[in-house]
Amino acid sequence: MREGENISRDKLIDKALYNHRVIMPLFIPHSLDYYKDSLSIFEMSLKSVNKTASSSIAISVVSNGSSDDVNKELLKFYEKGLINELIIEKEQIGKLNCILKVLRTSEERFFTITDADVLFLNDWEDEVMMIFEAFPKASAVSPIPVFRTQNHYTSNIIFDYFFSKKIKFSKVKNPDALTKFAKSIGWEWLDEKWKDVIMTIDASNNNTKAVIGCNHCTVTYKREIFKSIPNHNSKYKLGGDSEGVYLDQPSMFYDGYRLATYNNYAYHLGNKIENWMIDVFNNLKETDKKEFTFSAPILKKSKLKHILKNVIFKKILSQKRIRKWYYLRKGLSKIKANDFV
Image (cartoon, rainbow, N blue to C red; front, side, top):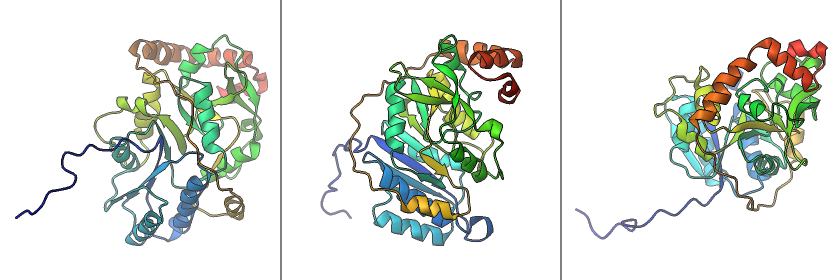
């Protein structure tokens, strides 16, 4: 038996209230050993992105088979308004599939896909959006510049600027941040040869510099590139070819540039809390929210450009002697050339 009328019947869905959505997949099966500090690190990450974002962002958290105790804490964060959308999967469905659950139903112009152990710093969103504004073909921008990203899904950038002086090897802006990133992925140190120079590109306005290439741990994307992702889900819980297929390659189909900010505006923390992380977190300042005024061009898919730049030209550039010659022309010393090819 039904009485009355459903108030949602024939009502249109309101358009997206946000221009930017942050997606955070989370897997914490227990609070022991490797995962001892994971919930505390996630809380720092969640609160840092809320506190430092420049615009009114939406945050989606997908619990990927986390423990009941963790899910109870997530509900508390949701009730406090720190999370806009909370999806709880009882079984582990895989990191990429958690991301896809949100991507396929959201309509924001920008998506930041981030690991749950990233500490966002003040100005990160402003700096990322500055890159999108300065480089109209930017499709993916990270606030964490990482060493040796110039060889990964970047052949279209080098093709476009092959003879331009705007591409060059520049002095690393924040060597200490590169070392912290290396430690966060399990390296005890980072050799000096990886943290003194990095490949950069200058915008046509000459006021903005970006690092060529970007990592996976936290990246902001233009929405349209995800129209080219596979219709099926990833078969991997973590790793495999999933990040390449679902997050890296789509930019190539749209002739999009994968870039990073020149300075460092976030830290990948890893699974263990250190005192410096707490100090950085405690010194974050609350950011007044605003809406971005620039209009980011919508990228168009081009099969011809993809084949020319990312297949034919990439094959040519992948030859070490050619790449070494090119890097020498872009300011890399002969001593370092072998390390970067």
